[in-house]
Length: 383
Length: 118
Image (cartoon, rainbow over the protein chains, first blue to last red):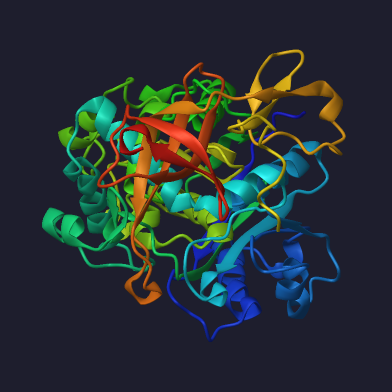
């Protein structure tokens, strides 16, 4: 594989929000056109399209680009649960490395309002997932069970979890692309309706959200801004869980992060800003440790120190994260890289962190009837 | 979907069954279907009927559902054979470390019943 640099030449996203009256092509085409323009390119320069989506049905990508007159270029549809968008970037990078293409577009899109509400349905295509789902296994229950064990082992109060929501929802109040832009107090968080004990409503990402995000990747840097490149791109899969696994380990994320650090030749201390998969508050605390920015058992201290606030030394989820920005599954991984590209280029406006050089995006998702996830991805970007 | 599959032994009282990997001795639950292409790599194994609560949550369904809260948990079987997910049955709030007995249930296939409440 060539070691040619892969640049993020253009980025954009729609506001994440309830948009039930907008059809997929209109939602995605908006960001596609903005991203191509952001890259100072024309649609004719795009050689392939990678479309990440979970619940939109077959050939969604072809439907989205049909009226863009792209002359039948390859369109690849990618599903990998909440890591779909990041997986699309990963696969596109492979094709660029191989020399198959020089410039491609990745679009992530999801319209969760089309599902009618409630929690995201899990994969039910085997005997174990069906059995556990019938007993009540859904993603909130998985995260909540982790939170219960976390508070028990660490001797922490439930308010620790609430502090994550306060931080990220404040960040979201600075982000015009976020679905929920109201800052909240700890009292607001803790007094909101209990969903899956100990997780209250404001500790859960909104489940009714639509949105799209896109990137142009290229082997050539010509956009006239700082050159943002992908230094590492890792996708990993869940493994059969054992009876003595520590559910606070987030093994799949730690594995993906370690591989990403190795590929980039960097370590956790080199990271200046992070967008991570805070679908529920407990996730951020666990991922501090899985990503290595906190030692084992030190995630709570890291949060309380203010290090991960926008003004801290390792801001985490300056966009507001999934908690405030929203989590349209197929778009999430792409939107994380949109945000980090803006941060690295100094274009993040009110939520701009202090002159970052290296950024990390982590997303993970799906369940195969254990506690950890089915698909996980870590990307490291640099400028 | 028939979720009450053949994962109970014919003992009295019946014991929950898992599949034991013949190479690694790892046990998976529920047991593989008999017609699984990898069934020959596993053997049926009776599981301990008692386990310790490793972690749990209490689900609060939306008000419009009209459903009462219910508890879910992960149980570590006593001999550390396996960790199993399921419904918890007890009065009041669960406690990590409590012992539960696995019992047959018509709706869910099995439930975990707090031993002190028997």
